[in-house]
Length: 225
Image (cartoon, rainbow, N blue to C red; front, side, top):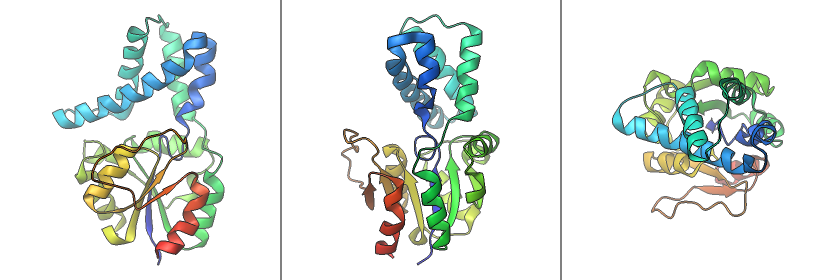
């Protein structure tokens, strides 16, 4: 069976830890804590804005989370430092397993889309800089709906835009909230558990498959078909 596949971008295709080296130069031994706090707050802010029906571009959530992290960790970064970090976020690298997996899936005949809370322009820039944009049929962004994952409207919008059906589409994500949102909506899902100690939220929803690397995905889809 040929599937329509929605690839989450931040944390699944694109390694958000790519900002670590820049942070290391700026904040030293607090770099990892800073990076984790920034990422977690970025997601929290998107969830809160979606619930409040107060949509802003995802980059605004990123900037506000950066400001919060500086206050929380009592780190006084200059405006230039913050701008540098925001610019690094626009050119983060892809994980090592991405290109070969995308090529194999395309060869199998699946339709591949980038599917993100980020704006279409921001995602296009990321994919281009990571040299993976040519592997996708298109980009599906939440910006047209003015809300964020895991709102079920976002997953329905993906099926609408790609002219696909739930049973013939997959959400691939390293973010548990995203997988749970897609499962609740009714899509097939693959959770990418890149770190052994990452815990999947103990809710009533579980992914269709769990993989340690994207490289496992083509074979998993063949088995599921």
